[in-house]
Length: 239
Image 1 (cartoon, rainbow, N blue to C red):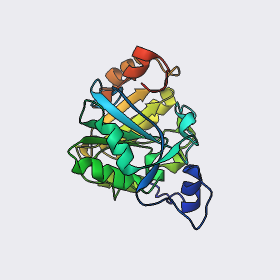
Image 2 (cartoon, rainbow, N blue to C red):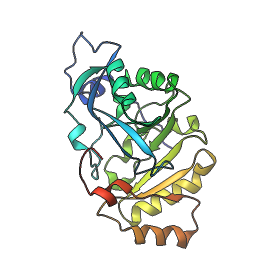
Image 3 (cartoon, rainbow, N blue to C red):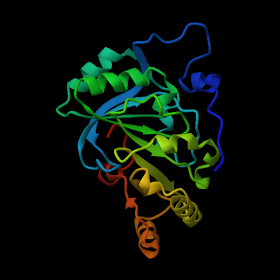
């Protein structure tokens, strides 16, 4: 398996929507695209009322991305302000997402503080940035980018040994070639021994029935997931 170089710091600074300069964001701030209360549409937590904290910025440009609006738009807010808004909603389940939330180093502090306050926290990350320093209490939902994403070379394979059964590995499948690639990797790397594995059809590219039939045909030990929020609300933002 190829070992890939970590994304350069200058690229991450650009992904945060800021110019590289000696003056960096304060340790108690993050750049936020949106915070909203909805049902979790993906992962093993599907259907659970959840507060979503979407951070600004992402160094990747996946062809199926449905949150390109988070690449640059956002407002710098204190972590305490973010936590206060999270606390205004009637749940103890939080999902920190993006963009790519780990493109902002202060995301680690936000995750830790949420855990310290007793929240059940999940992190949705592209798999292109090191997850070693993420609080161990966080459930890390780590993408493996397929060839159809256009970003397969960004996979940071060193993340895989860091995963455990409280985390999840996600593949977004854009076509049958993607599915075959993912199935081969699943077997070669024994991924289900590391963490539960999710296969998700790329919205409007692979039908639910197609992916379901491929999984059943090959008897894969994976969870097929669909984006529940899109079934309920379509491509509306903030849900």
